[in-house]
Amino acid sequence: MISVNYDNILFNARKIKEAIGDKCKLCAVVKADAYGHGMSKTVDVLQDTADMFAVDRADDALSILPLPVMMLVPVEFGDAVRLIDCGAILTVDSFDTLKCVKEASKISGKRAHVHIKLDTGMARLGFCTDEISRLFDALSDCCSVTAEGVYSHFCSADNDKEYSEKQFEIFVKNAKLFKELNPVILHIANTAGICCDSRFCLDMARVGIGLYGYGMEGLKPAKSCTARVLAVRRVQSGNRVGYGNTVCDGDKKLATVKIGYANGYPRIMKSFGGGWFNGKFLPIVGNVCMGMMMLDCTDCEIGIGEEVVILSDEHVLLHPEQIIYEMLCNLRE
Picture 1 (cartoon, rainbow, N blue to C red):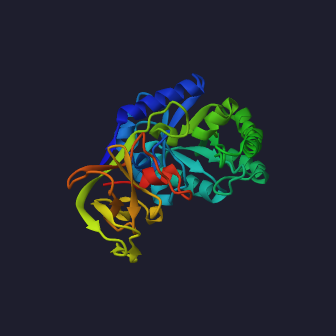
Picture 2 (picture 1 turned 90 degrees about the vertical axis):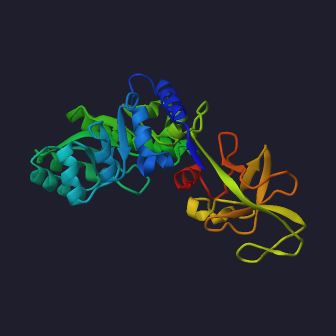
């Protein structure tokens, strides 16, 4: 069972607002169904706190309007027409995207409001430094597109301040050129960026994981997950458990719980993950199945119908190759 504490999301947003200061706007990133927390309810609870919302699907943007919302990725022509018509903010990350937006604006009959994406060293999306001059010329010749913001994204602000500072220097150098021409909003800081250096906040901070309780001290995790016990059985040493014929390495009592990789709990957690019951950790035995997994409950009293904690504010267990983003986005009913 998935539970989301929306009061905690609001608490986190207010905490982050305090951290970034009154002069910096808060853009709440609610893509991927608000990192698995439910986009609609998250937007509802944050609509009086966030200054803007950010998504990566056209339909999500349309559902948030008329609240301020921007697309974080370039969109196809048809979606661009719909979004321009409704007043959403589009991302322009390349000359191809700019051409698409200009043509969509003509079809819509309305001016396109965009934020320019700069690539400062992540090699994902955005204009490079050697394209800025040509971009200025293209924008000056375009009366149907208004650049209201310029942004980029840190790739490792949580563990590489030196590289983040390099990204920041590249961004400020290029973005300030736009600000000399128009009163654009500059934004590059994510949750990790806010914690890394207060200079990074600029005019707006785009915050995702922090809203949901991670990445900054003093935040409250909003999502919890439990799994119901379906069966409890004794298994003798040497017997096989689950798919792949895992050999039981001792006499054990196993609890079969109703969660698996179809619910977003990854198979990679075999021999690493598990759950908690009455504060005691119950490790996984065998492979994670599609909708179930078996936990070693030898040393505790547990019965059918009881709930095992998979994720909570006190219990978070990740494989070394996992990040909390993955677990939050994937865990679902």
